[in-house]
Image 1: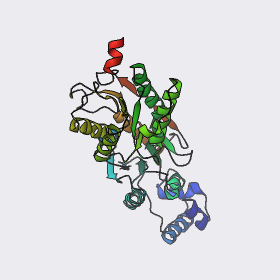
Image 2: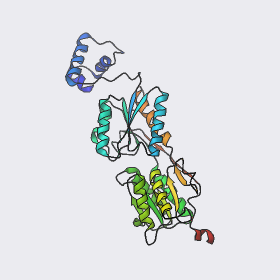
Image 3: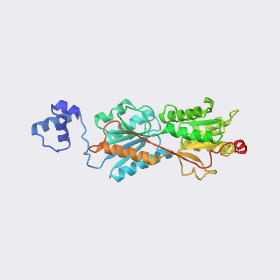
Image 4: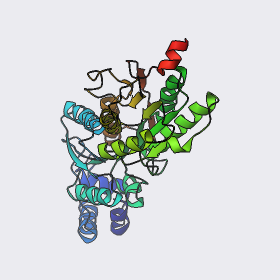
Length: 333
């Protein structure tokens, strides 16, 4: 709109009045110059904000339980306002992510909710300046002027590892996501600081950074179990990695927590149903998605926050039976 105003030789407000058909009248001459500039620049006039909105949502993997719950939260908030969402999965690939964003913009979405696969592309970073509101969900990245809704990943990991320490464990492994993802880096920091807080040594050989999917989680757990001195406890930083860890333990005929204790990051419908039921860090995934959608909608409406609002949601430990200490520790107590 600023470009249209410059070419037409009018104010930005005048362009807005022409595009939105009000609220103030525009002279025939000014209207004609604005319309000519719109045609010259190929400016795509977006629907008025009072109408039904269409929001694009790009997540790394919509089949991942955490993201499917977050998307459900987004859809719930949008539906409540009579709006719609278009959801796409980037497969945690930056190039695919950028292409999906471009496709959604060509489809004239009114705003975007994005969980970036890595660093936010500069083209995406500039979207709010060009008139497309953007909220970054779950992960960090991008300019500080972007809206974002995240989890307190550092504190969540710290609490989980501290629980395992207080349960009597000294050899605690971390099954984590790729280091290029900021949530994984934050959970690694929480893990390391919890060990330091307890006066325990950092043991890099007990850390595995793998893609957020089940098979890499299984393979990484196999490697940990095959060590000459395997860990007695495992903190798994996502639901899908936890599923992979349980698969590896079952392959070896091992039980949790008798052989290896586990605390998982993220609750799943099956977590309280396995035997013994899993202790987890519960993430409010649906509230995460709903908050991201509400922040975006408030930005689209008059009076909403325009720049750089950051919302951090807290998790909580759900204590079940998979985190207890080694059998020799229990006997000694």
